[in-house]
Amino acid sequence: MDNYKIQTNPFIVPTTDGKLIEEHFGKASINTGDYSFAHMIAPAGWSEPFQTPEFDEITFVYSGKKKIEVDGKEIILKKNQSICVLKGTKVRYSNPFEEPCEYVSVCVPAFTIERVKRD
Image 1 (cartoon, helix red, strand yellow):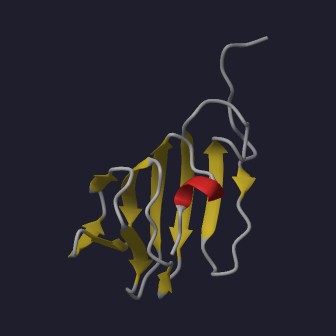
Image 2 (cartoon, one colour; image 1 turned 135 degrees about the horizontal axis):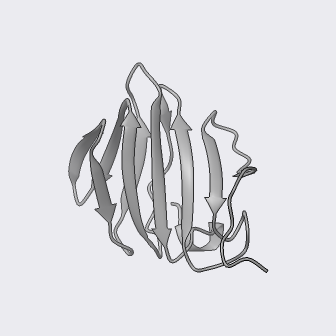
Image 3 (cartoon, helix red, strand yellow; image 1 turned 90 degrees about the vertical axis):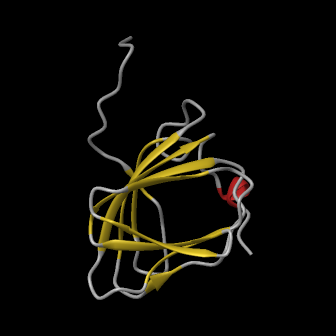
């Protein structure tokens, strides 16, 4: 058995809001480790409810912009910028802009629907 895995078929997380979520490594994709790594594309106009997750989430934007509401502040994350939102922080992610936002996220411990704690 090899001590590595090359991912060529990420798990596509089912969504109803038009957002593409491809989990390459994590609980949903390979059920290994206590982290998750996902590639995402949030369409223009996308948003999700506030959440208070039980994981740290690092986001890096490849293209477009992403709005992050945290601690009463609105942060606009742009291309080649990253942010780390610590677990237990109430946060809301959205893309109210006119172009899609492509980004990757790393969650530690791994993203699970039970740990996200959406409002």
